[in-house]
Amino acid sequence: MPGLHDTPGPHLKRQSFPGGNSGYARYFVKTLIPTAIAGERRFDDIITGRIDFAALDREGQPLRMRLSSTVIGVRHDREPERSEHVDLVYVRAGETRVVKAKAVVMATGGWINKHIVKDLPAKYRAAYQKFVHAPFLVANVALNNWRFMEKLGITAAIWEKDDGDFGYTCNLRRPMLVGRHQPLLNPNRPAVLSFYTPFHSPGIPIPAQVSKGRAELLFTSYAEYEKKIIRQMVKLFGAAGFDASKDIAGIILNRWGAVNQLIAVLSES
Image (cartoon, rainbow, N blue to C red; front, side, top):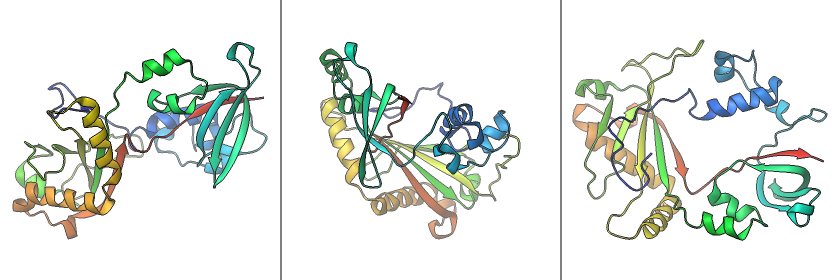
């Protein structure tokens, strides 16, 4: 994904599981807690099986996954080489809780780790400071149909971004056919149109671009993004019959670089 430039490389091909990257997470969950996803350990069942959320955090099982829990601090109980356990502090339902673990794997990005790992070695912290993490927005527009794109003979669009434009490219999600999941790519049927939107301001230093873009990502309301997306779609597809009130079923925003998830895999003592 481009972070601070417009056009992806000419050989870039996008593929995704039904549900996007949740396909990878489903494999982790099925391996660690087999009863959490209905069916056998095979691709079809793992990707499309119903999730039993109660099975994730059940007493008595060797491994538990706790949802809605934001980790805010991880620290050895003493110097790492002499440490007997790790204290993991997290917030759930407004309450701060502590888990003591024999080991913790920080399976998340360095831009989070440098704040969460309280006794991170200074040289690691300094190294993390050298990386630049750009914000990025993916907007998924649920369509009741895409006849307006068929009329134009396209399933994707790319444009030179002018002032006031939203994004620079959009495309229909190519449905992956998986076992029971056999969606049809038919202009008369529902589909998802995805917009990929970097935040870049050529001409100013990269750190300043990142800060400016992240501020825009954080402080632009959903309602304002909705207006921008619809305005862009009217500009692109209005002449081909696009009608937002009839053709759009919903809009979901995935803001990368503003809200991040932390996953900590631990062995409880």
